Image: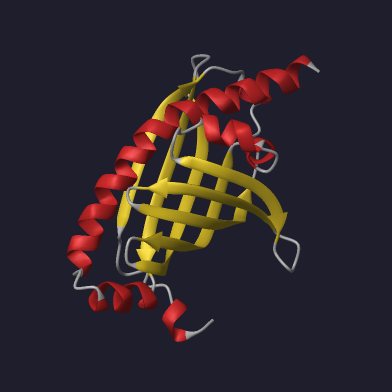
Length: 185
């Protein structure tokens, strides 16, 4: 990886955690199966009009990868989420994402953590957590466009938080439909 693509994990552009009830039996839920088989149209239904496209592929070494294209605020984000954890009740996805801003292209790292919790009373809670870190390229890009890191982070926090609030309950409903369809087979 070039120095410009180096992820600066000590800096946080944005972080957002949202929860939603998931109306499906615990044992039927399989987030990894849902995520890595998510139809494009279903992905689009999970955050209209922001979600543009989704697909599944693998890395060169065979690790599962989800490709998501979405608008976050004024940026078109192309995410290459590699599964670091892909389990029934937890997925931890990491992407070096390409972002098309009004000023041109740059990159950020996006970490997407999806999990469910059995509440012990017959209910399940879905948690959708998204955290982004700048790359060195992003910092240079921002500076060249007269934008401070603090300004960029504030804008990204607002946009990402709004997006996550809207998509989380729709993801939970989609995961529930997937679980119920699987358990009906």
